[in-house]
Length: 460
Image 1 (spheres, rainbow, N blue to C red):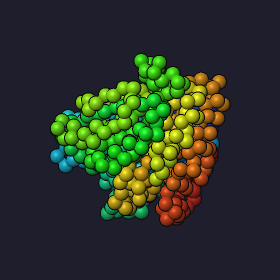
Image 2 (image 1 turned 90 degrees about the vertical axis):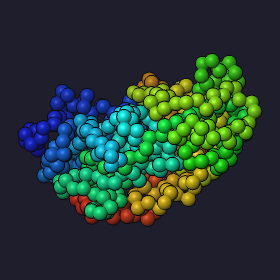
Image 3 (image 1 turned 90 degrees about the horizontal axis):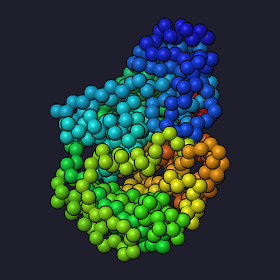
Image 4 (image 1 turned 180 degrees about the vertical axis):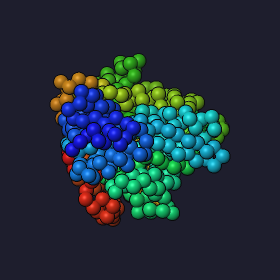
């Protein structure tokens, strides 16, 4: 295998395993808890042509292919043993058609940057909550978004995807052409059998008035607060997003939360509206909240940039991390109480556990979309276990797995973008309906008959 011949065919860098630059190129993922899996060659593509040539070279040399499009990479699915890693981190072009309310984006634009670019046009897209996450991995997995009750999953606002197939052809998939690949690319995540190089998006009017309320409750009020949280959202308009957290209390509440080992229950409600009056009216049902909170912040004006900053602080970059999420139609109060005592003993104070409520998703993905994305339920969430030092790996991983075991009886599905398919490979299948799981494998056999792409489990 002559790696130098691929470098001649591409504009981006081609880095072999024995190259001095390999380790730095391999390690550019968000999660510092990296698996010791190394490809034979990394291709840092700078355009579609590079991706085409990389795929052709991989076919010629019988190299398995994995793709890194940007994201949390919680369990490192882009890092596989052997083969080729196609790195898309140099593809970040964005073209906006404000009049048509559409955009065409390459894979490596972040949630935060996407919203910044749309702001001058008073437009928005259902981007994800974490500011650093890039479009590709987020959209391929389905995309749980800000204002998700109203806008829906992000992939439902993808109108077409340009991609390079296992044959090395650059094609466009949409509702009108290459429909089977369009079905797969919206939800297949790490199981996708093509390289998405550009996404065409439907845009929305930007909410002009965003207001948020936050309530902090001691664990002694956890069940009551969680029941209120669950019941309240059933009566709220679909432009209100509510999430309940178990987290470390802010420093100035530490004394009041000492009995709970410094932990607190935090409930947030965010209304996305066109006017202040509309936002205030949307949050009004929360006036019936339980007594006994240790702090309340009521209907404060905010914006996407501030929300990204808050979210980014809860999921800081460049830490070691394990995550596992689930879909459930169980009571949030029952789920939180099942793990409350365990959560008080988190080895690291940055660890959080959350549940977001989507009452209109109780019967699955709304609208019966024709997508590989096929699992949703009334409650979404789980533990995000984070720490800094490798010496604390065993304690944090052990705590995390025990937390997952406590929550497992409540699960009716998984979200592929935030599930650890290495700890439990069955979680990949649980992210799809039985029919979608079957169809996804049939389409991989049809469009990638030689198994060029690693898929969910190859090389792990």
